[in-house]
Image (tube, rainbow, N blue to C red; front, top):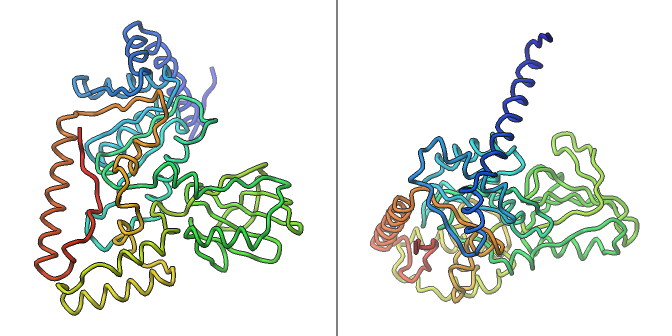
Length: 370
């Protein structure tokens, strides 16, 4: 008999529990009924309502379906708290690497509030994983319904704003920096947050917003001589990589700035009160300079192609063929989405009446079609 104490004992128990849950998941995945459901879901497009199941049974069943699936699964919950609980439960059954959270911003439509770096990072990471052809199952993306109502980059925008750097690749530092700044990366003395970059001689540090750690790119002339991950706290590099994907720093297509400024300038502001007009003009000047400021996301609709199919600006457009969408309590999802839309419309009318929002301001959220 072996006695374990302190952290060692807890770690051993944790691994033992996870091994047991993994074994149970594999057994559930082999059940004939689960096999039939998984095969039905593989006939894209497909969606499954999980509400009739007891709450305790949802995580193991979804985990088993993920093991059976040849493509990622998208699981939609009613709110952020439910999404966090579901993600935690699923990680117990599948492991931490197999579950990603696609969160919603705390801001409501028409609020001058930008999402935090963590929200942006998690959303971009989910999109990037869904578009990775090398991604292997199981993978589950858990999202509250509000997260689906917040527009994101289209698959074409995401691909067009992503660059893969490879060891030995011929590339000009200046060209790389110009490209990243145009996409919205911010120059800083030292990289300390996602979306920042820094240049020191032949070294360029970049923190892709979808990555957990920043990247150090060392050049020898116009050739990439070294790619290493580093700790932003100590600035010390510790992991060499052969290649790295540099995605966009934000879900807003900031490279469409010229078109966005034209659209903003064409808006009739005659109904705004003086203070709101001054705030609008100040924000416009900051956007023109490419500055980051709190509330920049308020102007996000002007950066998008307003004639684009709304479905192209949701995470659903990134879900690969053969994937399934799992709905927790579908009727409640539709009801909650309707409440969000009603609250947003009431807020829009209130702001227009108060002279704080122009009537032709484009709708900054999506609607739930069920």
